[in-house]
Amino acid sequence: MDVPPRATHPYIPNASPPAREAMLAEIGAGSVEDFLVSIPRHLRMDRPLALPDPLRSEAELSAHIEGLLSRNSTVRPGRSFLGHGCYRHHVPAVVDEVVNRSEFLTAYAGEPYEDHGRFQALWEYQSLMAELLDTEVVNVPTYDGFQAAATALRMAGRYTGRRRLVLAGDIPADRLSRIHDYVRDAHELVRVPASPDAVRAELAAGDVAAVYTAVPDASGRVEPCAPELVALAHESGALAVVDVNPMSLGVLAPPASYGADLTCGDLQPLGVHPSFGGGNAGFVGSRDDERLVAEYPSRLFGLVPTDVDGEYGFGDVAYERTSFARREEGNEWVGTAASLHGIAAGVYLALMGPHGMREIGETILANTAYARQRIAEVPGIALPDPEAVHFADFTVLYEGERTAAEIAAALLERGIHGGTPLGERAARYCVTEVHTKADIDDLATALEEIVK
Image (cartoon, rainbow, N blue to C red; front, side, top):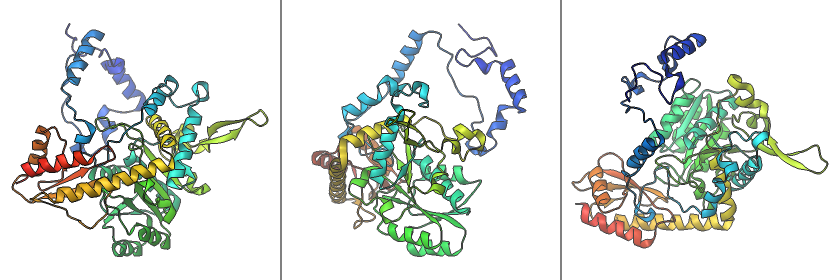
């Protein structure tokens, strides 16, 4: 039946006008718009959502969702060459088996009354991740890698008491947007190329809290000057923050080994399925410096003695510094949305071990090199940086008449998810360990037929 005007929404009890007005009056707000003042006006929707009428039964809802799901189309992993921050990797079945256990899947914040081993699982994750990163401390995951980068930069700002943040190199627009949104009230962002001379010039101006770079960068390029940028940051008293793809650390030196103070990134490659842009969780790692650890906003779990002689348990480290304890006085606000992905990453790392991570890393390096070589042989396609080493992601330039969007659409008609268009004449492709030589050859053959 029709919902009467201004009636309470069946799924949102506080949607009734009296309830909403009472809640606004209680906190002294004139309207819901008052909560949105920090969001730029051009990003706000200026019209009501075009929502359908509410569904009144479980059967109706199930039918509706099944109809939506039936519109999805998929290709097998080896036919998808999309990456750009969210990657297809093989996820061993045991990872899904563990994270779907009810004590992990349904636990909220892992409090003692419903812990069921969750504290230990996250401690094990932190320990394994710290070994991969060559750090001493790793946090319980943030929401995603973008948030981890922003959090690491805020940590550096609080630690040094300085205002300027130097971002060096190629940074994805969406990551840069998140960083800007999170630090804008406290810091000034300065963009420069991944060049020692450019970074040195900004450091000379003073008041730099951190130098941030990524290895690999947004285009998958392994930046050879990263250690020099870290050294320059330290010479000026700034911290060095390096963003990494954790899957690359089986073959690339972890940033901490050449002096990075904070290492950050996204856990998604480590046993977490890509899911319509989701399936993300961010990590931050550092040395065990008491002042630096005090700046972590998220939870840290440690091994602690219990009341029973010789018996140990798992509990929060320096819990009083978190927003869970200090509420609005905390360093930052963090929630619990991504802890399950931390457990998945822990299981994945335990299964792979050092040799497995190295084998996967070597496979991805080899596949990337072969894909770049093979695609560059296609008439009408060129590489912008043919001599550079790339990991997983790489960019191609289209020199013919067809645009990147047209080429992507033509590939999809052949059952291939091609590269992500970057403007009209470029696209970013990605290969991982799930791609075979035959998959890459099929892509190149399709491009030979399409690119003109």
